[in-house]
Image (tube, rainbow, N blue to C red; front, top):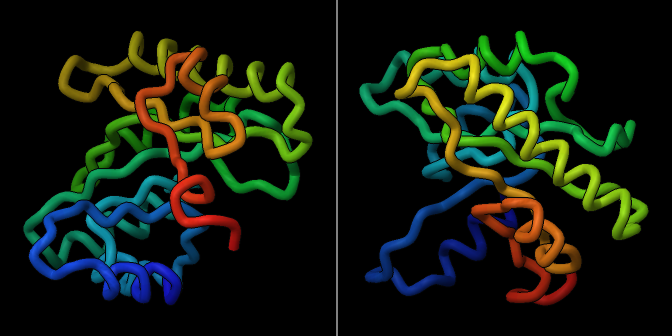
Length: 171
């Protein structure tokens, strides 16, 4: 969050832009995240989604979010279990958050085949969820692909890529 605040402060104040949070959100940082960001693209558990709703009940405006799914099965990554539709459906049904879609991060191995599989899995999860939800809750966003694998993301149906390293350089 500190890095985001520095970058946001460096942007010309007259520019209009949407501040999107990507990265694990700890429950003790929810209030700060809600003050800083316009959207949270990495809601990685039903517990976090419910905590967001609890904090958002104090405001009038709902929050646009993406649900992060751990499609690679990498134990070091956060995200909803890709085999648990029930948690996803419960998060989508919550008030005060608008779940626009799903997000994943490719496997740490960065092998094309395993990355492509992880991205294809996210697309299939979205299709499956959309068969189970009412029309106004359908998911439209698939956020997958970063600077090193965005082409695979686009090939597998990504509607949003994250090009931080390509734009800002390595950390």
